Image (cartoon, rainbow, N blue to C red; front, side, top):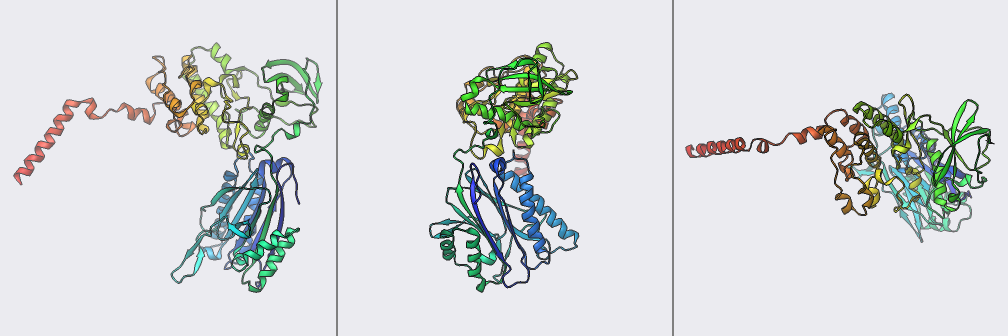
Length: 567
């Protein structure tokens, strides 16, 4: 049995070539420990190579090995669904290309197989399925199927695969997520077994088993006399589940001593404290030096000692920074050696905040605004591509150095999809960002997305140009979708061209669906009138020239009547 502080499972596996000389089935599992198990989960996969192909075994082995290794190597900020579907799509494309490279155009003789995989993460089972292998759940004395075979029936009533890995350039993957409980037992089978076995006997063997490997082998052995194909079975039993839904990013830091208040000249873990640079109710930040490099060393405030959520947000900042490599996002270097106290470390960014820049530059040129917004867009894209949201984009969290280079900082409020899917770290009532820059959907309790970060960015752009906010303090008063819809945009004024004001109004629209479809679209609309604006500017002929319009309509009607009378 494999244990972890949260998720714990037992696994049993067995396979047989049956009456055949080769076994085209392939199976595997990865059951990581510690933080990897919390962030990635336990992965079990099964593939069945088509029997008509000489490379069916190669295809099935490639599928399983690639899914296991590539899933674990993918960013842990991604959701299970995103990771699994991307990996499967990539493997399918490779298999299909191998078949074409070999000069074969019939999938039955190429690198083709089924693939079924499950990922156990948090308190859920994520299922990916292509083909006719199956996932079952033991339900009392019977088996509940959790997948549907991808079969097509030919004219002669023969059944063939309608979907398989490598059969086409793209593959459609069945995905769904099932909640699991302690004691649940899941079975994964290839068709060579489930077409001939006795489900009730299989359930009886599993429920009385103490060794799941022996149980799997016993079920295989019982089916062998009737076998005409390869047989494979995997048994997964849920032994324990997390008590709390959210992944605990601070687990390894809780044992560290609470840091003291530093003074210049103090040394900790090879870092020399130079001076204190910022203090808030949540943290205290110091400038520190190690060799020729300078860092921002942040320690939590004393108020955070008893606030579990605050500590989680505190360590989230460095966790996020280590997973993004972008010149417009502050980095978090990992120094050699272990830490002796609870603190976070990031690269020190020289310069001033965008807030100070706005004070120093009350009347910026449009080109200055576009340049800053463009750099922020590059930083936000790095978040969004890893399925993260910044969630606290404001002038105080944007740094500009002497050369005009922009860097995003402060990720304590960041949303990480791969973490949140196990259970929300932040309650719906929590508004983590700064109210005047936070999108209204946060306050109305509606779903948020990358368009929520776009809203914040557009508010900042509006403020840079006008010195004001597009909705004043009204966004913070939103409590329902009705309140959100009632928000009224304040025109930017004569200092901003009408087409540019329309761009800002669109990007800050209270309805996320009506904002631009990409950050690049918003960035482009800041440079020239958008297609939306141009269409809006072209009023119908009836509105532009109503007299001529009705004269034309009357003339057409008169000609029509005359034509009908002549007939």
